[in-house]
Image 1 (cartoon, rainbow, N blue to C red):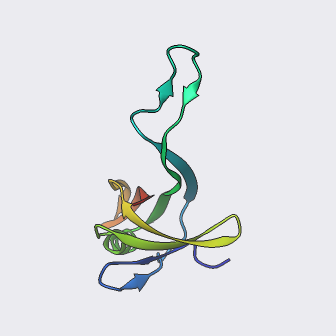
Image 2: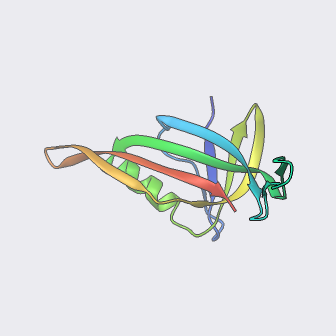
Length: 123
């Protein structure tokens, strides 16, 4: 199996995470306007879609100080072009990173082991 994701930053630098994620969840969402709601007369849903099929990728990594630092550097940009597999097809989307949670699990002899989780959300 090849890499789960490839990331290109706005400066043109392309990279792949140095370790495989523990978790990779892909979500597709639809975005509706504030006018979407139920009719007061019939109770039927009145949908006003703005955009359909937006991707978000939830990722979680477990790694050393250096591995997690490299992944944080890789996603440190306001907009990224992310290439990933979804249902056997390759997808490319402009995304931005969510808040990053970096949980230190173990520090042994000055060497840290971290759990990093974040989402990449389509622009």
